[in-house]
Length: 316
Image (cartoon, rainbow, N blue to C red; front, side, top):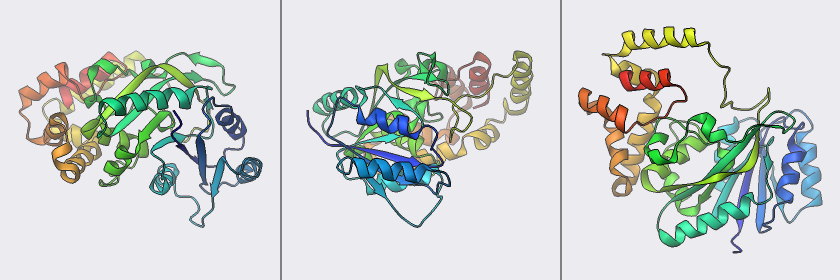
C-alpha cells in the first residue's frame, strides 16, 4: 500500500491550534502524503506558521499563494479540491488532532472497497473523539452524539450531514462525479456526501481516528447548547400546528436547498443515480400518506431527539 494521498487544508486565523494539527499529520504512520494548504486571508500569525513548516518540510507541504483573500471556508476548500490531482484526497481542519493511524486505516479500507466496487465513487469516514479546547476527550463518539446510525443507509445524508469534512477520504471517481454537479447547498462536505449517497458508496469505520476540538472559534459548529425540554415541547406543538398539513412550506423553509441539490445531481449524473435519490428529488410530487409512512419507516434524517424526529415525521 503506497498510493499517494493529498491532504487539503484551508486556514483562517488559526494560530492558536495550527501547530498541533500540523504535527499530528507529520507523525502519521503512513508517509506517502502531501499537504496542500491555502490560507483564506488570515490576519494573525497563521501564514508565518505555515511558511515555517513549509520551509522545514518542503517535500511534504505545499503552500498555495493567491490574491483572492477571504473566500469563506467552503469556497476555499472547493478551490483546493478543484486543484487536487491525487487518486485519494482528505480534508483537514486547522484545529484538530489526527491519531497516528488515521491515513493508513482509511486508505486500507478505501482500497478494499475499490477492489470490490472498482468503478464506484467512494467516501470513507470514521468516528471521532470529541474534545475540549485542551484536547481532553469529552465524548468517545462524535457520531453517536449526532444521532448517526449506519444501519439506516445512505439516504439519511440527503437532509443532514453527520460527518465533518475533516474526517473524509475521497477517491478520484467521487471527485470527478461531484465536479459535474453544482454545489447548490454551498457546504463542501455535505455536497460531497450527497453526491456519494446518490451515485456511490459510503463506508463507515466504527473507530475514532481523530480528536475533534470544540472551542469558541470553530468555523462551523456541530454542537449547540441544549434547549430546555419545556421549550422543545412548545416548539414541537407550534411546528406541528403550523406545518402538519402544510408540509411544502416546512420543506421550503428548512430543506429547499437539499431538494434542489438532489435535483441537480439527478439531472447531471443521470443513469448512475440511485432510486432513493431520484425519489427524494421528486418529493414534491409524493403522496401525503405514503410520505408519512416513509418518514417513519425509512427517514431521510436522524435527529438526536425524539421531538425533533417526530416534527420531521409530521411536517416533512
